[in-house]
Image (cartoon, rainbow, N blue to C red; front, side, top):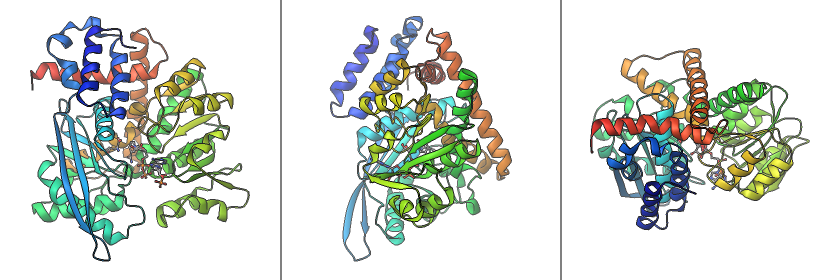
Length: 449
Ligand code: NDP
Ligand code: 2IT
């Protein structure tokens, strides 16, 4: 429910302009509800059209991506880049390759990215892009040809001072390598800072691969320490997904003393009451690109069940949804509460429906919103850009130390922003307000652009 007439009008316009973009509507509504807390203190936002501008992307690019499969068959996919907001720095945000990709999903992700990047304190605007291409079941050569075709078109719209893409679902080190190679070939220049998540031999940063998952645990650790005087030590953790984010969240949660007992992919989930064997999961997912079902075949005492939502039937103290948006609905949230969880940290972008967040908060669980919790990934991308500019690379310890500091600082910022607006403990509102202020101030100061 929005109280301010101005914010309600902006929201109505969003609904009317793009009636089918339900994921985008969802994130805009959440943010506008948070802004309701402070809008009366800022008449200049309405006077200068700041919120109207904030919900409208600066630029949306859509393009054709033709490619040839291994048998000579021709395919046409659709590529996109949503350059949402560059008030505080060049556009920055990942690329998603998944058959469900559409403008609503990329606008929601780009919108979240503006605020997330602001929280990192590094100078990065917000963007997101990708394609409805499905890398699953494709050969390495097919993925390479697709990436080359995608970059042949995208390259004219990006650059180290313009827009810096990175990975997201379906885009990891392999894809970034092919994309970077094509950028270099087409442009005839070695501009390392045009992409992040690069390989370590060509300008990538140590810790970038681990950063999102590690950062999720660092932020959770701060939240547990400051709000419950507690830690990961001895806790049972369930993590959805088994991609980049889920795997390195598992690694860090284990290092911090927790037992991770469940992981999933889009087909189903595994339960290992003795604790997931990380080396087995890494081998299945990172080396063999196989399905998670293989884990139960290889590890005695573990079980597999079909259906990815079932993972939340496993009781846990800490839930880390790290697969995709809207995986946790109201029914699932009630189950997680009933099973006795104390904290939920959103690892994926917007994995919980708003009703689920409300159920968690009303039941007294700690909730860390994704734009704060998973900001370690893009923050380390920012550190990669810094190293590229310096033509230098920091050690693993140096980058990890900076990542930890950034996550601790994000927690403090969002915690205090929630207190200041009269919603103590509500980190969802805290994150939106702390992040928005910097972007809005920058937009105001730079005039109508
Ligand atoms: P990956 O592609 O490495 O892994 C995605 C995982 O989620 C896989 O296990 C996949 O299963 C599962 N998944 C994807 N789509 C669905 C779906 N529709 N339903 C059920 N399961 C699904 O991606 P990442 O780990 O990089 O990303 C995970 C989440 O984290 C996303 O929300 C992403 O936006 C977010 N994120 C990623 C960052 C990064 O640095 N990579 C940074 C910040 C946020 P399957 O293999 O079966 O498809
Ligand atoms: O959602 C995200 O923050 C990412 N996919 C990472 C973006 C980046 O530019 O590192």
